[in-house]
Image 1 (tube, rainbow, N blue to C red):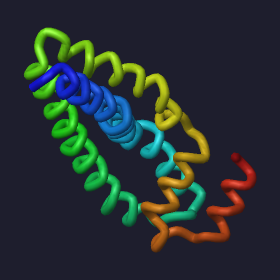
Image 2 (cartoon, rainbow, N blue to C red):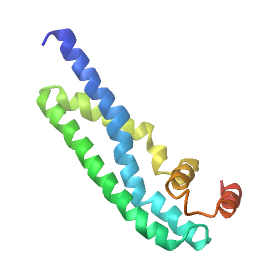
Image 3 (cartoon, one colour):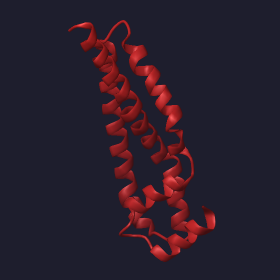
Image 4 (cartoon, rainbow, N blue to C red):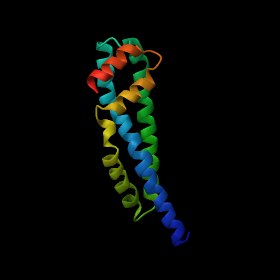
Length: 136
């Protein structure tokens, strides 16, 4: 592989770390924190039944962990193959991606959108809209 090919390969790994791995990992983390708290608040308000949350949320958590592990594993494998600069090419953009997409971990309108998409068939839309208008 020539120098240009290697540079393109490094660029692809860096873009993968920034735009795919970082948001994927942060989303998996938010499933155990922010989204779980928001689901608990929705149950307490009577907006979504507890059975729907207990049915769907563990599946989402498991899928998030498995997909994140697969994405991080593939990123680390590519970084290992690109020695000596591989980890700098992959890990630095990963941490920059964490910094850029850290809003995923906050209790904000993004949490509301993801919750609405996940439970759109099970929630009471009028109560949900009132809750969102009142709190966000």
